[in-house]
Length: 126
Image (tube, rainbow, N blue to C red; front, side, top):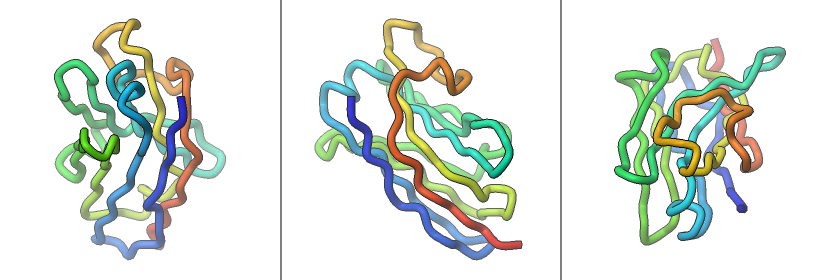
């Protein structure tokens, strides 16, 4: 399973950013996709995920109301749109793949995920 993450940048507070997670049709059919972020010195935390069965999306409390998650089937890409960015959103962002055989819940700890894309850095200065 190969995941390609992109879209990180330096963004001013209040700005928006869209991250991308690209793979292939098999991956998006067989795996839930989650987004995680890791700030320096902190553990990797889940911020959003999409269920591969029904396309339902989920968000952490810190992201609710400020983010959307969508998938483009034709492009085999999942997009994570973040709005009203805050300095505490700073970190390296990763997308991960969780086998659907493990159940429908996708907001899980990072170590439940099997596969990872490379990180993409998001910086929101204070």
